[in-house]
Image 1 (cartoon, rainbow, N blue to C red):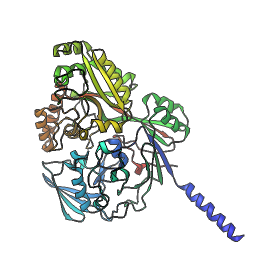
Image 2: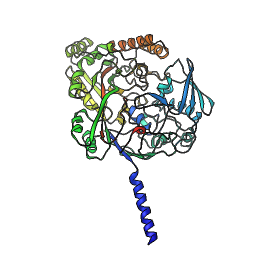
Image 3: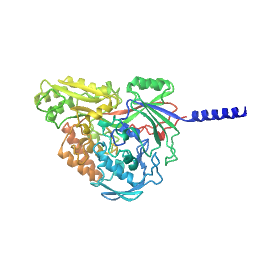
Image 4: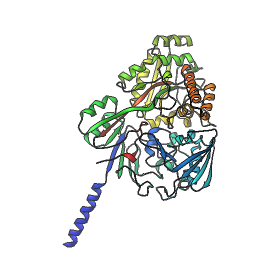
Length: 529
């Protein structure tokens, strides 16, 4: 009898221990493409993986830069930085973190499948001083290098070599189970992936060996579920099945306000949504115009720009929550100029005149690629754009699909298979140079520039300005160059901004989950009752 009493007490204690474990459940409108930290430079994917992997530097909830795997750094001369690496850090499999892992990660970032060549290209050499000190050489003076690195996640060279994962997984291969790094992880971050069913569920648990013992979070386990349907996602939050969801369609904000136990979280997002166009092929892949590319004509691009009523899209699609944009950067970004931020004027009459001048009085047919589970109301925005273009004779054949398929199709690893597309960008450095270098600079494989310039817009004058911006340390001169680059782009109708979308989350009243301005959910700061 005594043994049974003791056994029962033990069982109750175990059940009680399990009950005390705090499990945080959340949902997003789509899944990540893979667990490879260099597989896709997309904010949601990188933010998701930032709970598992770490970089030399890190952003706090207010995007203040702070030490991570590097404890400190010095810019010893214009083209050299010394980083002092954190000691006593281990990867999830127990491997020690050293300078060799940083050097390996940098080299891996430059392999063909990597989507982080832009960040890797900011460094031309990394020298190992000792196991916990490295010297980084930059191709040009770069006074903001540490801000280029918060999403440059470090991998274990030993683990990668043992598992044939020394090459990065390209977006086109991200759904393939043939790449080990796309289906397994081994970071140094505060959480470990314990289960992964793509497009179904991913589970995490706290990493007992994590170096920072002062984390704010009290979460022990995390369950992530991708839910594509907006109404289903919102209903699951209201019913109590989930603790946090995003994005919440702006039209559901009032629904959350009215429901008990939940609330909407919203604010200005640093991300700009924009339209890009194929400007490098002699004939578009998706158009009824044969033998030439109408989007190479500035008048045609101008016709598209003036045909879209951004104010109406904000009011009707975004419920007044977006900020119609005239620049590829928002007010939160260093280098933003209010004087250049006025959107293109809505003027369909001018659009028709420009089309007629360009030799397309009856318009033409144009294929458009759009994600349907990446940005706030993304497919609805694309449908609105298509509707406005139809009014001037440009008939849009919209291909809206999940982001995994979208990025695999339109990305550089697949030859930028698109003619007209919608994309969003948050500069990871929160500086204009990042946007100009990645989105506007001519596509340059050797220099790793223009990696997200999917339409291959090219203006050598702007390229020269970006090169000067990279190394200019005088703030006034640098701002002047940034302004000139954006004005030149705007006058050329090279890339067409739509808006800065709103941050839009829904959360239980009892959950504290700081909303970063870049729309990243960092488990480190989530607390539960």
